[in-house]
Amino acid sequence: MLDPYKIREDFPILKRKINNHPLIYFDNAATSQKPKQVIEVIKDFYENHNANVHRAVHTLSQEASELYEKAHEEVAKFINAKGMEEIVFVRGTTEAINLVAYAWGCHDLKKGDEVIVSLMEHHSNIVPWEILSKTRGFDLKYVEVNNDGTLNYEDFENKISNKTKIVCISHVSNVSGVVNDVKKIARVAHEYSALVLVDGAQSVPHLPINAKDLDMDFLAFSGHKMLGPTGIGVLYGKREILEEMEPFQGGGEMIREVSFNPVTRRCSISWNVLPWKFEAGTPNVCGGVGLMEAVKYLRRIGMENVKAHEKMLTEYAMQCMRECKKAKIYGPKDASVKCGIIPFGVDGLSSHDVALFLDHYGVMIRSGFHCAQPLHQIFKLKSSARISFYIYNTREEIDRFIEVLKEIEQV
Amino acid sequence: MVSIEDYVARIEETCGEERDFIVIFKYDKKEEAIAKILKKAKIEKSISAIIFELAFKDVSFRLYGTGKAIFRNLKDKGELQKVLIDLLL
Image 1 (cartoon, chains in turn brown, orange):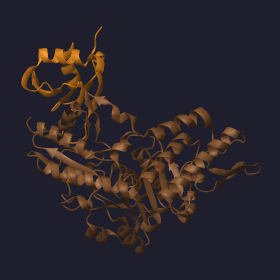
Image 2 (cartoon, rainbow over the protein chains, first blue to last red):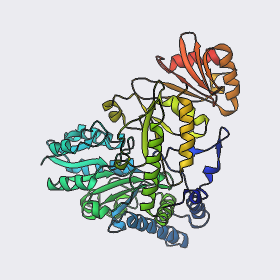
Image 3 (cartoon, each protein chain N blue to C red):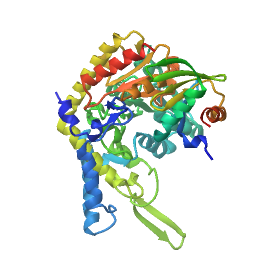
Image 4 (cartoon, rainbow over the protein chains, first blue to last red):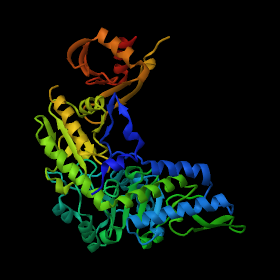
């Protein structure tokens, strides 16, 4: 098991007080806090190694390029990809999904095709497909969610067909914390020759991920939710699929050659090798280096330990919350199908009231729709409050949260 | 010339059927803003000086001791601004 008290020493922000109360950070599904190791590596990069990558022969550029490439290698190891050519750095999960939608979908989807998403998706895995369906003419099908918040696999198997070209699904719901069986979904999708894109924003930071074993074709995730800086994220894609795809954006870095033909008076262009073919322009070099340090930090702890710690916290919090009179947990009551996220409401109060009350006591939680409005509509919820855990959270923090929650119930 | 921008740092408009407005007062002006609001609005209920349930003209709202307020059932941001002008200026 990991030691959250020892881990907390690495997170300077956790020493802060908010409204004269010790900070309790339970909004980890939105973004994680950063350990000093990540903060220091970012500072060191700008103080000692900053230069553009893959462009110059000077020493600094070589150092920056090596660090940036090493960052891709570390991320590849972290999710057990075949190699760094399968790891494209992007701004975050949203950009990763948009990359697939535009670079793959714009060329491979047409009228008569179908794309499957689910009703538990974050807006970032709905909106790009809705936008694209209007120009490409394909049909978008939504897999239903059961009353307990789990995915309706029967409905998925009913909706998939030979027309389905891609299945886009969250690994872990950012609202309910439900863990979807993406290995099973990939197996079924591949029987119909459909691709599978997994939104791993809420799974990669919290669960051991083996991209080869899960057999997903694409996996999108964000660095800032896993101890890394904002503005850096990852699109994992199977090499053979990425090689077949057209580039997402054009510019420097992503080309091998741009040759002007004086006869046709046009340029012929050849693409760079993977993953650079999908990283047009000067990349977020420092973000990549920060993400590498975050990944190293998580590997030192061990992702099985991260998972076990969050499971313990989730079970404990759900057990304590059940003792509250007016607080109601939404979604599955069984913590074993979940991953570190608990949505809830308090009778007679809006989620924003609950969040503002907790904020008074230094407890940071999320309120609203969490960018997943369709799921709230299905459950007829005006909004929800959400707590979400990470490696530095403790049972004592949950005890304090429950104390405040009981006070809220008096309102 | 004093304006509501002197007191208000940000206004968040929530999504969904019930479009609440969350007003966040400037940190160094929040005590002054709270005092002005409490002077003008009627206190319906107060909980340990953390939350005040208030009524002002036809508008009900909640004010938090941390310097935030939630306004509900307002037509739009324009109506909110009128209420804030009446409360703060």
